[in-house]
Image (tube, rainbow, N blue to C red; front, side, top):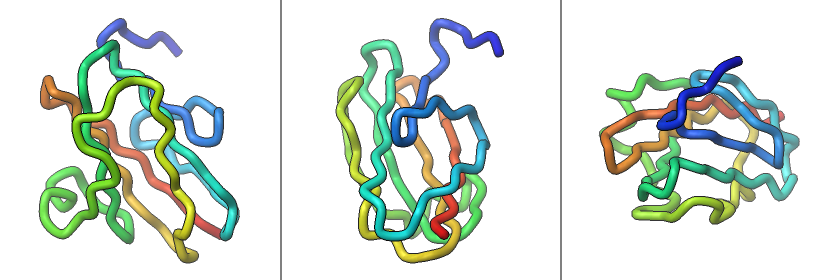
Length: 102
């Protein structure tokens, strides 16, 4: 897959994932999320269930705000089920990711 220079690059547990991908995590595992947005700051939020970007604007939990590239974000402590992770860059670009904790 070809990725543009301004496209966010996201890794879950060291494995690269793409926009709107679904990633499976083991319950109780110390998962981590790493983001590279080309030097811009970003915010990561999470919400239980499979949500759209618009649904993430209300009631989601912010994991990090104004973060810099390469800072690992912990995903531990998630109960079984689906979660939506939304990454918002300072350029207002959204990157949505679905996590399934089994």
